[in-house]
Amino acid sequence: MDEYLTIAGLAAIMASTLILPFSVKKVEEELEAFLFIMGLSAVTISGLWNLALIKEAFLEPIKITLAVLVLGFAFRAVRPKLKGWLERLIKALGLRWSLFIIILFLGLGSSLMTAIISALMLAEVISILKLERNCEIRIVVYACYAIGLGAALTPIGEPLSTIVVAKLKAPPHSADFFYLLNQIGLWVIPGVILTSFLGSRGAGPTASSGHGLVEDALETRLSILLRGCKVYLFVMALIFLGAGLTPLAERFIPGMPLWALYWINSISAILDNATLAAAELVPIMTDKQVKFVLMGLLISGGMLIPGNIPNIISASKLKIKSGEWAKAALPYGTFLMLAYFILMTIFVK
Image (cartoon, rainbow, N blue to C red; front, side, top):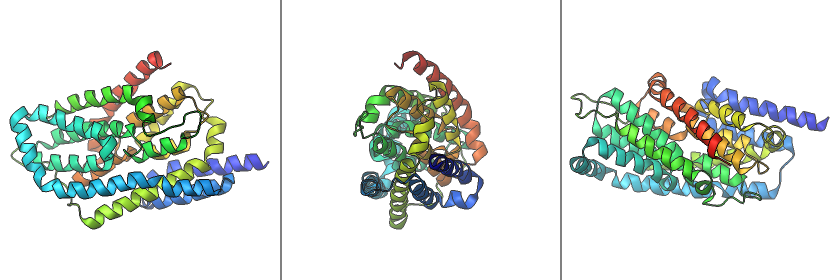
């Protein structure tokens, strides 16, 4: 009976975590605090409190938080030079090839400079370009797909990758800094290259005489510090949530077929994919199952604004509406989901 009560309680927390963030505006606005409460509740219901978990929750967020803070201040320092660099690049290579290089750099570079900083750099570049609005939205959407994919290659790239490595660091996976690169690098890197190329094709050859997308506000020291605190709390919350939901995940997730593990994560389009990774991944899963879960999360996370961090930051900074994002992102996301599923089903052993 106690086991059934535990599963029922965890199922209620899981349902709340999936439903409330996109149905209750206050929860969406205070997502870090909400997930922290859900995480503490899940660990309490599971009876999994121990010093090792508390230590992990305090230590695991440090690396990505420091990366966000240090790189945030570094970007603020070099930001005034960005316009000159961009103008020289466009003069040398032309607009489309310059955009290809920029998107590729932001996508692959996000694994080291974090998805957050890449998204902020993207917003600044788009503000400088001042192309037609629809062209800029398409460029932003494709660039965020590239960033969302590329950031998953290291545990400091984004909260999702931090959580994956933290949850799978025990045997048999023994995840370390290079675990994600080894597991999904051959799938992610070609996707980033393709997305960068297609995104760069969306730019017209000439700039609009009017203004396109423009950043809502410049970065301040306080905003950088507050963002670092939010990242720390967010990752800590997901550590607790992932640990607490382990009994529920171990009971149901590993027995699911690969196609279900892949396609069920389409809900990442409306839910942050780091939260889903925390809820789903458990050490008893095979590497093949981990691959299908991660690629489903990463691709579908680009489809709608709530799906991942670069989407949220870019849409907020540049005032892109949900309908505008969906119109540009859903066709490409659907194509990627189908293409990756077919190729992974054939080639992942």
